[in-house]
Image 1 (cartoon, helix red, strand yellow):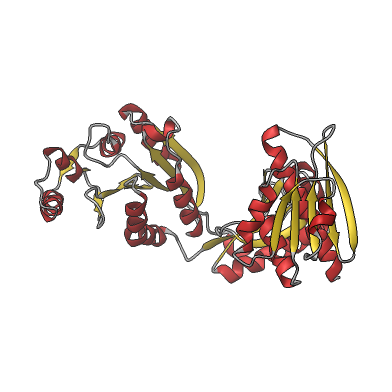
Image 2: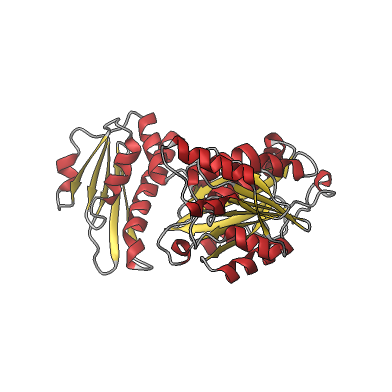
Length: 395
C-alpha cells in the first residue's frame, strides 16, 4: 500500500502538541517508577493531542524553571505532576512563576480551605502549608477534593500549563473533574484518537518490518508503530477522527493489509489502552473451546510455561504440569487430550514437542540473545507451536 496522506476532513486541523512533565528526585534516581506520565499520555492522546515530549526533572529549582520554559515554548498543553507539597523541595509553583516572570501570590480562600481540611482532622494547620495557597500571578487553582495541594492552571503565551499533585488518586480525580474538560474545550472541534494493537509471534522485529515495508514509514496515515518485547511483536495502528467508528474505518484497510501479509504470525488483535493479550491467554482460549485437557512437561523453562498457563486458566483446571523426564510423555498422557513438552538445553538447542489426538510435532529451538530472555523465548515458542496445531485442526 502506498503512503497515505491524512484524510481531507483532518487537513485543516493541526493537532495540539502536548508535553508531560514528571517532577521528583525519586523519579530521576530510579527509586520510583513514573506511572503518572504513562497514564496522562494515554489520556491526552485520547483527547486528540499529540504527546511529543516526556520530561523528568529532579527537585532542583533552576532545572525546573528551564523545563517549564522549554515546555511552554514548544507545546500547546503541558501537564506536570509532583512538587506541589508544603516542603522545601516542592518547587513546582516557584518554578512556574519564575518561568513566566511573575511573582507568587497567596490566595486567602486557599488558605481558608487548607485550614478547614486540617481542622476537620482535629489538627492545626502547620505553618509551612501556607505555601500551598500560593499561585503564580494570574494563575488559577485546580480544586483538589482529596488533598491539601491545589493544582495550578497557568497560561504562558500560547501554552496552557496544568500542574497536578504526584499522588495518583488525587491526580486522576483532578484530571477528570477539571483538566480534561478544559483541554477538550481548547481543541478546535471534536476529535478522538484511537489505537488498535496487532500482537504477533514467530518472526523477529526486523523480519516483520520487512514484510510491511510501506506501512511502518513515518508520516503515513494511519500511523503504524512496531515494538518488540521478549520476542512478542506489537504493531500499533493509530488513527484520528470524529469518533471511534471513524477511526476504525480509517484503520481497516491498513489492518487488512497487515492480516494478509502476516497471516498466522498474528495471534491476537485488540483496542489500544486495554491490558495486552498474552500468547498464553490465546492458547488457553483455544483449549477451552475444544474441551481439551493439557499436560505440560518442562525442563529448561523450569515451570515458567505452567505458571503462565495457570494464570490464564482462571480456575478451569484443564492442565497439569510435571518436570522433564525421559518417559514424561507416556506417564502424563493417560487423562489428557494434549501434551506440551519442553526439554533441557543441549549444545544451545532446546527440543519442544506437541502431542494432540492427531499426532505429534517436534521443533528444536536455538538459544539466542541474552540469557535473561531465553526461558521466556523458549516458553513462547512452545505455546506458539501448540497454537498453530490447534488452529490447523480447526481448519
